[in-house]
Amino acid sequence: MKSPGSFALEKDSLPLLRALLERLESEFASLPPHATNLTASQLNGIERVLHKAADRLQDNFPYFHPLYAGQMLKPPHSVARLAYALALWINPNNHALDGGRASSAMEKEAVGEIAGMVGWKTHLGHLCSGGTMANLEALWVAGQLRPGEKVLASQQAHYTHQRIAGVLGLDFEAIPCDRCGRIDVGRLKARLNQGDIGTVVATIGTTATGSVDPLAELLDLRASHGFHLHADAAYGGYFCLADNLATETQRAYERLGEVDSLVIDPHKHGLQPCGCGCVLFRDPGVGRFYKHDSPYTYFSSAELHLGEISLECSRPGAAAVALWATQKLLPLVKGGEFAQGLMAGREAALALHARLRTDERFLAGCAPELDIVVWATRGESASIASQRARLIFAEAARRNLHLALAELPFDFFDLTGAGMKRDRDTLTCLRPVLMKPEHRDWVDRIWEILSAAAA
Image (tube, rainbow, N blue to C red; front, side, top):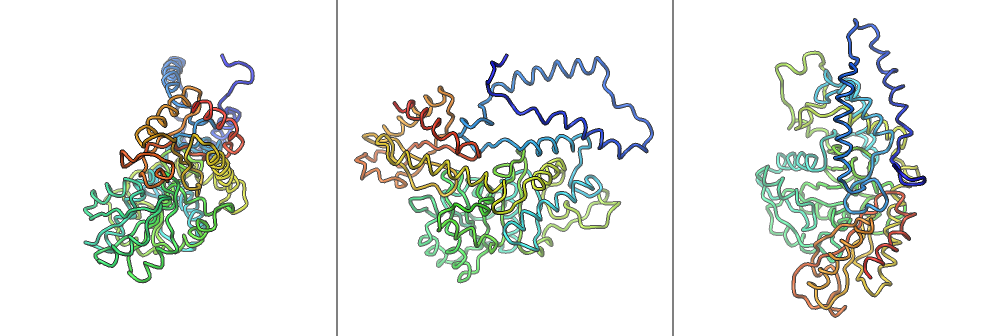
């Protein structure tokens, strides 16, 4: 039993679901009777199993709470949860119009709004299961356009790019980063001058530090070397709506619409349940690489369907309904409620970074570009500092503050200036992801716990 004033999961929206289901079923009133009610025995069995499921789910970190800042987990908006659940009573499949007529149209509208966010009036794109599958499709198309040529990405790009390249049979090389985790443009240019490069991946928000590659410089290099430029904005894509970015970061977002392909994950900052990614191509003509026929799936519709522009086949229409509903409630516009939530997370990151810079126990990294903060602990050596970081991580968790650990290059910090011995090439750092809007109001509490854990 929860005590008065204790934390509670949001349940106020649940009564809406029954009313929505009744409205949904009214559309099918002309169908012959078909018994769908559950018997008392069935209900008892379901209740028994679900109580066990609820008990098992208690073995989790509190991903929904502001004191959880470990991984990129943000609770879905209530409208997304309800819309997703509503669609499950029909369970549409957005592979073909025949299996998801309404939800396919909603997907096209929602994806079009994401494309419009970066300034694209024409595009080809769809939802998929997440950033990995979205990046796989983008690199697959890039490989079709530039067969036999290599893919370059930074050493801080998501590790799946190298794995995806292996799956697709593409050669992959990683380019070193600067001390803030962005691709080293000088090293990239030197590699491009050697030739044989077909695709360059720009990371718009690395998962380790939230760093944004210098897109303007990469676009200049594309103009002179002619490679395909793909932006992996799975984490940071939505920040093109934020008005409180640093000048250099803002400069990258202003030119995001000039890339050839783009990935954004609505299940990160887009307030969606996990399992919702989005891939977009600036040139709709790349749809020719997807073209295929099926002997049975598309018998009732001649219109171009999502299954013809996707490597995945069956895909949940519920994900499209949830995204559509969320974007109708919270439009993707600068200055809107959705954008303000992104800006709140960045404000929280800047506030925490400012405290770390003035605390002699810690060694702050570069100022956060988005809403991820990274810092090291001080110690006589990199090994000792890394061990201290792990101890603080564990003690903070014991006090209900859940952070993450990141293994970062020694050169990301001025450890020599801090008098620390370099006895290993990497440093174990502390890394919170302050992606919940509420984090702005919880910085004081987070710092209080962190400081106590460090002591």
